[in-house]
Length: 384
Length: 255
Ligand SMILES: Cc1cc2nc3c(=O)[nH]c(=O)nc-3n(C[C@H](O)[C@H](O)[C@H](O)COP(=O)(O)OP(=O)(O)OC[C@H]3O[C@@H](n4cnc5c(N)ncnc54)[C@H](O)[C@@H]3O)c2cc1C
Image 1 (cartoon, rainbow over the protein chains, first blue to last red):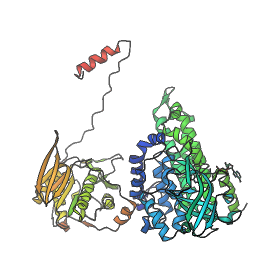
Image 2 (image 1 turned 180 degrees about the vertical axis):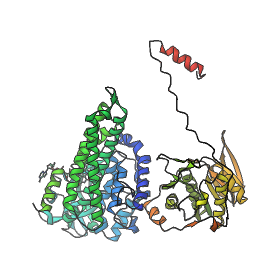
Image 3 (image 1 turned 60 degrees about the vertical axis):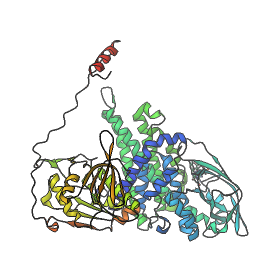
Image 4 (image 1 turned 30 degrees about the vertical axis):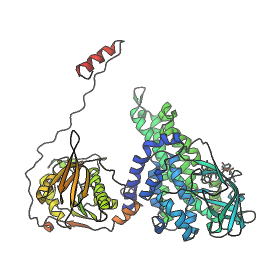
């Protein structure tokens, strides 16, 4: 696996050192518990504190508010892929809601707001979420219906959001609202405190990501101080769009790490299990499956590392990030399926890693911009 | 309070190790990592300094090729500085030589209130360096500590025994070996990793320590593979197998 200074030109000793920490963290603090947390429908609250203590949430956030004081897309790749080795998209999604909810606060929040929101989230004491999608649709962001009406030094929020990761327990919601007229130009972003009167939450029962709570939010005359507006009125659409790029490459990075978990599970089984007098790995059909998995993982991994390096160099490869998300989730889907075939009945049992990932694949291909939307956006970027 | 921790940097135990056929000792050419059993000493030292309300944790290590990777891990956990002794003349050194060298290395640092070490390394397992180090430095030695407390300038140690533990008091400074697993070593944080890069590591040779020549009497004369585990006995169940199993367990005197 290209995952260290020794095997890839992109990584430094710092990446290797932090990789080791996150790997051990995932192995010891997460992997032994993922099934139990799936059954519980949430991860323990103190996992956030433990993750905060190693600096898990800090990439791209100011040092004075507890962040790393730098944005390093390669470090982020390391972080995503190592945490994903524990084989639970739900745990990753739960921890990662900070990484989608907080960047707009970092970029457009006042220092006062940053101190109030970023500092506790960096340490794991508080949780942030991103609230864009509405019951009426997620892909067509420009048609958001939740409204924010100015009333003195407050906005009054009315409407609803759905599919919100960490929605049941988040302390802060970075929320897309309509402050103006129709279309993209009428959108703004505000931070809504979780304990605001008039905010209700109901949990959603899902196919996968069971360890991550997902909610529908209802805003009924929720009053938000105008200081919680990010940037200026009407700037929401570009914030949303820019926030998607890191989320998409994160989802692709996780997907390839999950694909690798599937591959490794299948490989271990194929080397051990015997049928018709020989190991599964000695049947040509199975060998080819394994090589196909490895091939797709390696190709995607190389692409992701190159994209991360280009992001660090100041490039903004939007079309390729969309394409990479599509390819990574397709590779993950393929690997989850083939691993399940190789494992046979064992992969159909609750608690099995491949069983979990096979279900979780679906959301990786939909959330953060579905496959179809990714292709469409890439097509527009290419200028077809 | 100033605590010095002896830390060993070892080849990654997750990778297959190799012996040098000439010396019968482990090959140590590649990257070395912090011995897990020394993580406990580092953690305990950091906790003691915090409990004391201030001070510093320093490290001493002996390793080939100026290797500092394992030291960086301990620095990232929170230690302040390190002295590394790296000298080709030390290749294959025995435990007593190691203790003498580490003892000399501690002199490169401010006087310690306390010196901690693991009870034994995960790659050598001689389990004798801490006691020898105490002798070399003329300090009291307390072994197999499961808890360590400093109060009123003296040391209180619960010392693990087979039956339970002894409560030991001892004047400072002293050399204490820490039993594996008694504290939960913290993970190095991102900030710790970045800060560790600029923490001072003084790399010295034997000459720098004022040691002219080293020689040792201990030799590893031969190495044998561990015996292969023998296959167990398979009892086919003909409806009466339980009787054979009962007889087998009875012979072992387990029932
Ligand atoms: C478990 C989970 C967690 C989530 N977490 C969050 C979160 O934290 N915050 C948040 O804001 N959202 C979250 N989402 C929502 C997610 O981003 C949306 O589900 C996604 O954007 C798709 O929106 P939709 O479900 O409303 O589908 P729709 O937009 O209704 O689309 C339905 C289908 O039609 C296709 N489609 C739509 N438009 C086109 C087109 N122009 N051309 C071709 N095909 C098209 C889509 O690809 C999709 O497959 C989460 C979703 C899930 C399942």
